[in-house]
Length: 267
Image 1: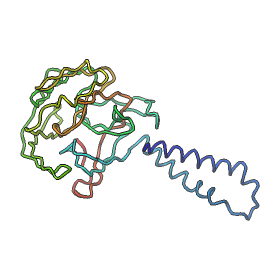
Image 2: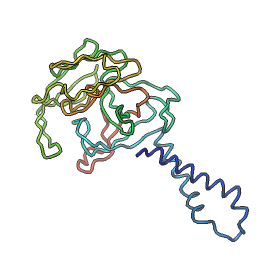
Image 3: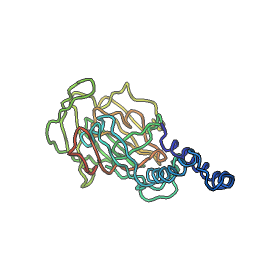
Image 4: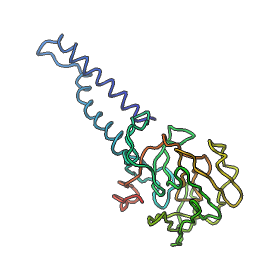
């Protein structure tokens, strides 16, 4: 469901009712006559819905993490806040950029509209920006010929859907001086070649059994999940167009199963 579109329709309907009543219907009522309930409701809820619509469209929007593709950074059930203006002010619903503020940087955790189905929102980490050459071979990531530093931390186990226990290794990976955690499952391949789709700019990528390399086109971004071997991401469905950007993930504000995660910044 396009929540922004639903709110916009409600705003138009309630604002229209309020305006029609003010200009036409109110003048026909006697002074002691009560407002119709539908007029009273429209006048009461219009300012509230307008405030929420503006807040979600231009400042922050809440999202819930539905899968483990960004573990250990984000867990299933995390409620997060996404900064809507970091990457520019956009026209609600149409998502057309009105004003530039900054561009996504390598290492940012970004929410975007899934290129295959823009009605769905995805969240991954920005690995490549326009012009970058991404190489992922033997589970080591290189950007523009420079291999990212990886430091082994500890074993990380979790239960996947279907009560399947996953045993992985946690690493600290660095873009410049900004570290983030990733998970590597030694039992999984670098990429499952049978799952790779023929996406736009597919010719910019080369795949083999050891991994892949991709050159990021203009106004496109390459995204990977932090749970590297259990993430369906750009290696399978391609690049994220600039117009699909929703915002930058900035804060975990709730998780019913992990209360200590309240208020954690997303790095």
